Image (cartoon, rainbow, N blue to C red; front, top):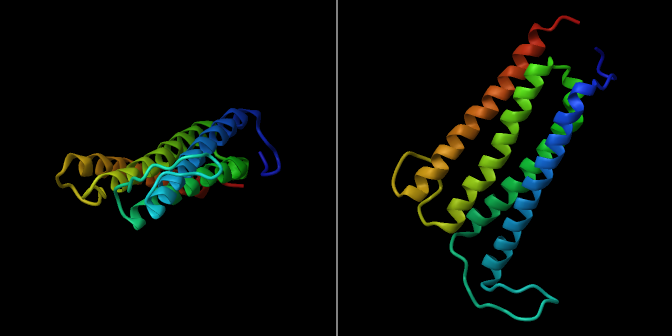
Length: 162
């Protein structure tokens, strides 16, 4: 199989990546509205009438991060969909890499929202409160997933003789 060939067995995986990439991107956009509302200290969208004076919890950094996590991870899934044929992975490896990166793409932005909504919940270390432990484990699984996917791509490509 050459890089220019687009095997039919990859099309469902590419479709899955495009769908999940779009959904994760939309999650990032919704978090972007949260970031906007946090910055202006109210919930309002022109030209929709009305305004709710409410300061969302969190910090500038937490909202920015949750917004960017969704946007970047969504785009990365789309990029993977585009380059998947060029990786020339066997079907089992391609499928595993796709699912590992979809898992990662969802876990990171959702875990980042915990920091935006709950105090002391960045998930950087194993510590109370429970709202910190949830993102900690989400990040932990996400990091292991992305490392596994990267290692699999490298090892399978390294072993391939063309």
